Length: 572
Image (cartoon, rainbow, N blue to C red; front, side):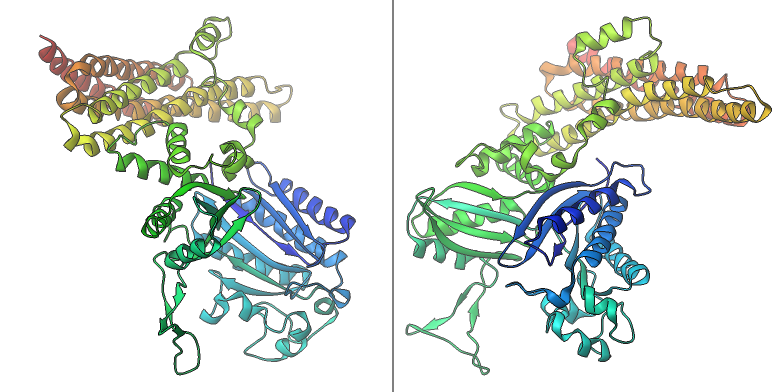
């Protein structure tokens, strides 16, 4: 999956369904219209509040799509919401009150902060709506705090715009009709927030609060002789808790008949989910309690489950070089995420929710097949999949065998001291296998692209010229993909050699078969490089492809020979 960000704007309307629906529709359409290769945004949740007169919309997608969708949401809110008539229980400063961008996958918080500033500048430039930048996008330290940006709320904007210290980061020189109607938007960037409840084997809210105070960053008030200690300014002196970036409180849930520690993890880099779980377990045990399970409120990023699964596998001294689905299953079982109700990663992990299954199925048409179906598809009269896809698949099998031997070695009795060494090799092999599996479908896609270029019309000189250019580009691409397969598959040899030399001796033959598969992958892909290079008009491109392929093939032949000598030596 590529770069993904989440956006959670809060709009100052929670009662008029027509207005809310129109804003959400603008967000959906804005994401579709974004100039990017990835699909548009996916709206994950719409949560209106009547008392607060406020609606929270959650959507996610590629950065380009989310930026466009957010802008269109702000535009529509500015058209439909008149802040001069707005009343609600929640603090607010504009028709779109807050607009945070949140990194999910393949993008950093710093990059989101830059995008937030660009979005704020565009909102003012094109819509005339004032913007403050907060949290990671703030231009000054004090404006990292949303409360500082929103001080005085909507009603204070005339005075704030006239004050050099308080005016928006992007805004007019004077208060005007646009600001009077739409107010100011607070545009920011923050990390993903995980809302989580830890179930305790008690009904005592007081005990749950004690555990919460032990772990939350703010901690508890210091007491002497039963009285809270105050500082020189009359504020309570606090004893910090053990978890950074965490807010927590204890409560009793009638529905479940148990007490919980309810926590918001606001900095998942400082405190990953598994660290919070372990620390709550420690604090609970110190008070004679036990954590019986964990409840995730809302969504969480996939990396939180992957990090947790690997953490618990490492504690068990087991290999982490296993499929992601198995890693996530370990995380779910280890933290008791299914204690209160079934935990379905397709419904709780944000990346899976925004994944376009149809698009993914199209891109992974071959690797989603069974072995039997793939073989039958290859045997049909269709020219694709052909040798290129088969070569990539053989390479994937070679990497898979390296991974298998590493995992068997990591779990071998008597080799406990070396589990981490083999686990690292298994992870490397697992990643290599994924790359080669992706090339299975990409090779067929490259062939289909070439066929599409050949089917282009050729009834005029212009069409002929356009067709020839498309064929040349597609032919070059059809030669570069198998070259990439060769360069990827050859990376399996160092792993396979390690497994042949140092891995579980009972699996040495598997390392040998892996070497045979990897060599076949390289040499098979080389044939596809050659046949496509022969069709190139640009002979410099053809010579480059052939020379690179020849060098990789020579390395593969030598590596396979060396590994088979090791394997046969051990077998004999």
